[in-house]
Amino acid sequence: MAILEIKKRNGNIVPFDALKITAVMEKAFAVSGEPTDAVILSEMTRAVVAMLEERFPEQVPSVESTQDFVELTLMRS
Image (cartoon, rainbow, N blue to C red; front, side):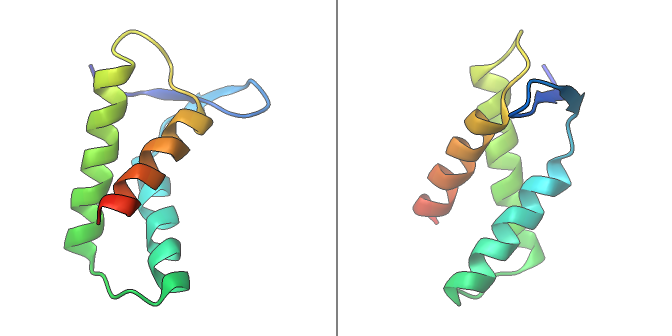
């Protein structure tokens, strides 16, 4: 099931935007000095979204859970 919403730290439910995941990972690569490109970032974003969809098929994921999956994906890269 597609992720349509996400629960923010303040408890608000807002529309989910996968591009925010891409932007965060792009910043992480820039800070680390590791080279990357749009194709790799897109694949990594899809991996994070797939993990969220698998873990939260009937629930709204939290920003914290999303952050955990982003960190896991970055560590695997």
